[in-house]
View 1 (tube, rainbow, N blue to C red):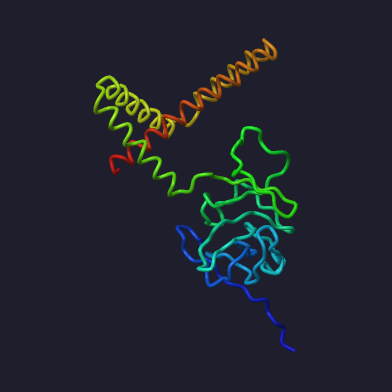
View 2 (cartoon, rainbow, N blue to C red):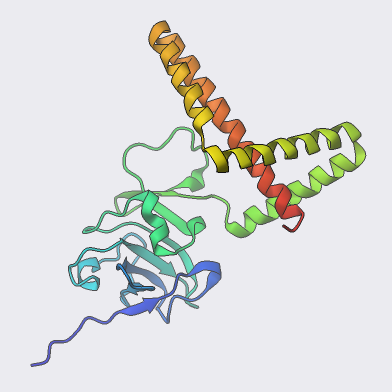
Length: 237
């Protein structure tokens, strides 16, 4: 008797609304195998957080990543997760799937973060809790960025001081981006180390001050880098 092989479909990355093969609507188990430029996707559809069959898709071999992809009637990716009873995909390794981050729902262990006040951040389904990676889609983020660019241009056009300050900030962000490329975060690490040394001497008060200082410095660096990217994008470069 011939052994019947389990049907598998080769799905694409699904980015930008591209179809994931000819899957029926619903949630499908998937695995990403080393050296394969596609996802192995089960044709069987289930509810989100209920798809199974990951070991069979992988022939019970190790995989790079595993989870579920949910598609609509046209095969367009709606959302995906890293839920699998066999394989445990780490959040920071989700890029290995090639799937878009703005549609990723990560398996969340432990209580909800009290800082996440938006009800759309979490999804509780079939006994598991998922956390949405990004509340804004890539398209929505781009729209907001363009709106912000318009606000900045209008402000700088009508206010000479704002224009001069903005140019100084752009120059400073360029300088910092160049410094990060050349030297990394050495200055930030050094400042954090000095702050922690002070914390050892001053106790809890010093620890709180050190953490605050490190957070402020990192926030400034990230903010400058984001402004740099936004400015370059607005210039079309």
